[in-house]
Image (cartoon, rainbow, N blue to C red; front, side, top):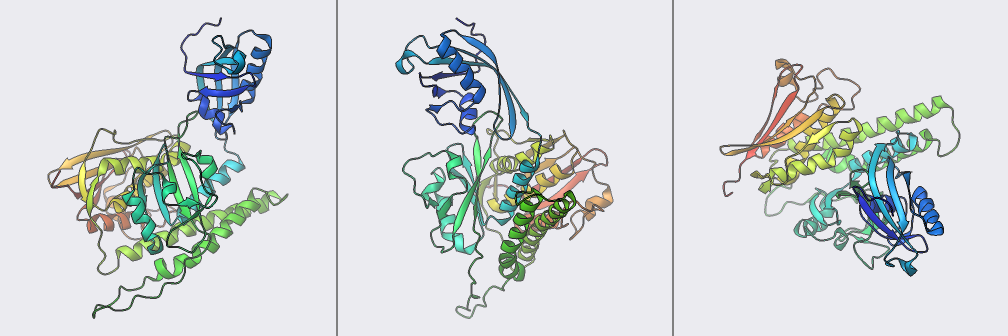
Length: 464
């Protein structure tokens, strides 16, 4: 009999070396290696160890090694014949994990290409939703008229599985289905004749199953042309937006195809290629991604500067919005070794503002902090009530801003002398415009060399 010690996770296999049950993180690694529960053990080192124990009838312990596509895993595992006959035929094995270490794999071409693909998908997504670990809806965001019906239905159906609203075309006979089987699947969207697909982005710790997901809804077809609304009752129709309604929908798809093709060339998936040409393709892909981001910024600029622009206030919890922003940008932060500190779940701060606009502002502020803060630093999101205002503060440990830079930072197209960072110089201008449209403001406090604190203020919830 092997000494138990401190057990991190347990599992049970049967006489056919199938994993019948397991705790995380063992179960999560087994699934990410392509296995099923129950199903043949999919971790090669563990499968070999279990077979040796089953055939010899003697317990063994050793370190096993594996990787799940993003992390290298090493774990100390003890395996011994099952004594209670609970395994199939009484000839299976009991598995105990006593230590677990995970380290990021070096980013090769495939990993870099996957990151770029995900970045492109985020720019092209016409609807974004946030899901819990069971793929149930937490929040949804979209301003595409064609998706108004499904967006409203999903917003009213929080807590339900997302497939209740976006039905996979292959059909689903049971839920929950493992997220890998749904990632990339074609879905039917009520009220739309376009073809759609979903991308599921997991939020997870190494070795564990995802704690939640970001869902992106995309179409490779441009939206149908919508005729300008006619005047009704003598009221003039809303002015047509050149970028957001005319240019962006037409340009996004071809630019995305250019980026995708350039990535295919750069990673040599289409065949051998000299290094110089692969580098050229990489530059084309990067330039295309920047152009997609600029298109989105210009469309947002057009919206906030339109005459009569207004937000749609609602009663929201700023703590919840802050945690969602931290979760969405968590992967980008981890790539630089930056820790994003979000408000704890038990903290709340009620406010009156438009949920998706507050989220948009926080994504910009936290994204900027991650972009310009040094590696292995921290970005903190804090909440602060202030009389009839509610504040969210995003603080970084970056180089900080001088008094002159603090004024210029909110000017249109201002990049504070930075070049080549991929920014348009519109993010803070748009964010302040949105904050003021919601009856609040966006300000900054900073001392050179001591980081910066960006403060978003919106009206407090008077009824809270």
